[in-house]
Structures are given as structure tokens and as C-alpha cells.
Image 1 (cartoon, rainbow, N blue to C red):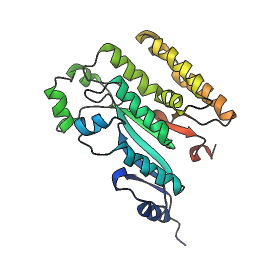
Image 2 (image 1 turned 30 degrees about the horizontal axis):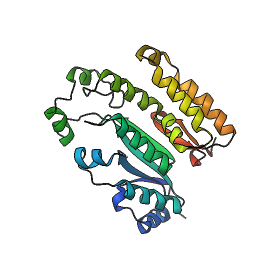
Image 3 (image 1 turned 90 degrees about the vertical axis):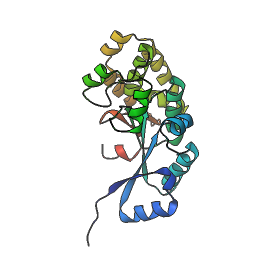
Length: 234
């Protein structure tokens, strides 16, 4: 009998139904990946021109959970005109959805796209910074204030900590204190900070207690929820 290896599927939450999910599961899919992009309804509607409501996203994740499938969310921060409060909306939405994995990237204006044209129109692109970037998740090349640029840099690395605060569980107070320390750091102190080591130590403590939380998984743009099937083979 031919055994089909498990596969993942990228799906628009607006088009996802229980019937589709059941067929995908029967075919061997074990992870449904949804593009959330932003938790801000304004950003999605006015900036991204992407009509995907938070309610439709919530229902899609609800269906995925009911079918016993793993779920993943894809998100962006540093979008043109995005505020600090709207960054938090994205993090809070993910905390409510509880995906098995969460990917978060910093927006990068690719040429010949509508968002690039918008950034150019609003004179938001720092072309010198854009040229210096070695990847599209390392930093923002938009002309935000220095304070907001540093905030985005910290969130890109520590977004799992912020999400843990919004889980409002036994781990939240510890992560809230860590974030307060992180936010008090100036640029030099932040660049000296060993985030990876701290994240592993704190995550290990909560894993030993079986407390739900997110920790860095594979790279700086991805966190995984513990407990989840990602940790079953350890």
C-alpha cells in the first residue's frame, strides 16, 4: 500500500471550510498555514487592500483545531503607516488564535508591487538602508522614527515574548517583566543582549512545568507553541 508523506498547505482563511479541511486531512495534510499578515483591520483594508477580517481568521483556526490539524500563521510588522498599537493588534490576535507555529517578518518594499508604489508616493523608503539589508526580515528600511525602528527590531526578535504576555496565563507575568527590561534597553544594550540564551532558559522552565507558551523555533522569524506536536519527537 502506497503511503503518502504528510504535507502542509497554504490557504486563504476566507476560502477555508470544514469540508475542505476534512478532504485535506484525508489526503495527508497535517498543517494548515494561513496568511494573517496583520491584526489591524485598518492596515489590511486601507494599506494592503486585503479583505480578510479577523473574524474570518478566527473561524478558520477554529475549524483547523476541530479537525485535529496543526495550524500556522504568517504575519508582518513594519508596514507603511503602521503604529505601535497596530503591531500589538497583530500580536494579540495570534495569542487568541493559538497557532502551533507563528511566523513574523518585517515588511520589505519589493519593486513593482502596489505597496512599493505606496511607500514611494509617501516618501517612506530609506534607499541607503534598503540597499544595506542582507535579508527582508533583518530590519525596516522605512523612514520610521529611530524609536519606532528600534521597537520593530526588538519585536522581530522577541515577538514570542510579547505574545506570551497576551496569553494571560501562568507564564505571562514573567514574560511581561522580561519585555519591560527589553523595552528599557537602548540600542547598544539591546545589541549586546543574548536573546537566544535567555529565551531557551526561560522556555525550559515553563516546559518543565507544562505551561503553554511560545519560544523561538528554528530561526528568529519563527516561534512554536509548547505543548504542540512540534515537540513530540524531542
